[in-house]
Image 1 (cartoon, helix red, strand yellow):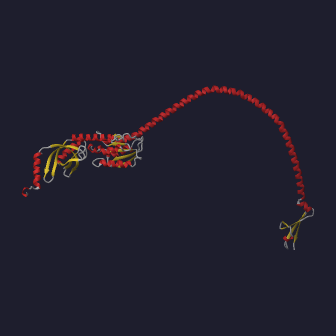
Image 2 (tube, rainbow, N blue to C red):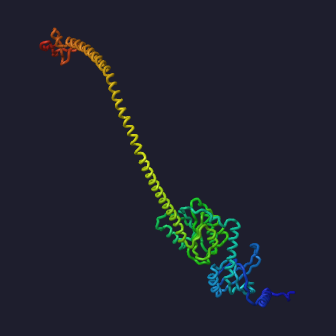
Image 3 (spheres, rainbow, N blue to C red):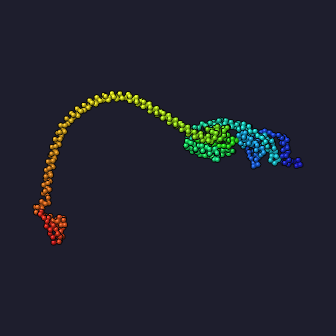
Length: 433
């Protein structure tokens, strides 16, 4: 038995020989790229898979290689024609030869590629995603949102270094009308394998502040058409569909619309077009205000004119009536004047006697009061004369002074003092002992 055993190398060599003799030609095959790597030497290494038609399970897998000399030609040819990067996740049709190596095992050597197949596959995938979104009832959700009349608070999803971001900000903030916008950048990767999840993460961050922002702007200026594949993904499109704020796209392409463009509230070609769209919302509001102002002015002017005419007509009717009323009132006034004059005269005549009688009573009362007061004054004058100190002195009385003050008690005077005694006719000085 041992003499009949083959070494591993021998067995693999026989397999290589059989494979080479059985599959000596080239074959066109279709498959999906699950992995793609380019090494430092320029060789491209892929993993090709085929999935079950009804699911995601893999039913076939193989390694494949595009040597650098071929890859230098196939890559630009494919990406220029298909308008998409050669990357994981797309289906391709390639021409291969079957290779087997005792050390490296089975692999496929890719020598050619058919871009039109991938274009068709992408179109089918795109339509399938659209159909799925429609079936789920979310395709038109974002487009059905009402755009705020003045979208002044803008959440922007873009790469920090994108030239399109600078163009957008310059156009928006430097608008010639002086409109003010608040812009907040939520940075994201806008191309490559990380773009899908990065943009979704930015949307999640904006969702936290949904009550603050008016719109979401998704912009990506420049870049190749092949970098747009992330905007055709179901997951990103589904998030945009169901986002509670209007999403405006300006991802910088002039031809095919991506699924994200189709489900967004508004799709524009470039970042500057998005900025102009936002500015135009303010201009339209200005125009509406101006139209309303003019309409109001015209309405007020017309109303004033009509009311003035109505007032003039009323005055024309009022003047004759006023003249007639004044004429009638004039006669009444004259009659009232004559009647009033007679009444006043009668009143004055009647009251005149009463007034004269009251004046006579008043005079008599005043005379009695004056006589009584005169008598009182005469009595007071006689009392005053009786109390006059000079008359008292003439009757033999005297007043003694000490230092200019009248003495009332001898105890007020000490010994050896000069005192003065006033008489009716002169004064006597004395000295006490």
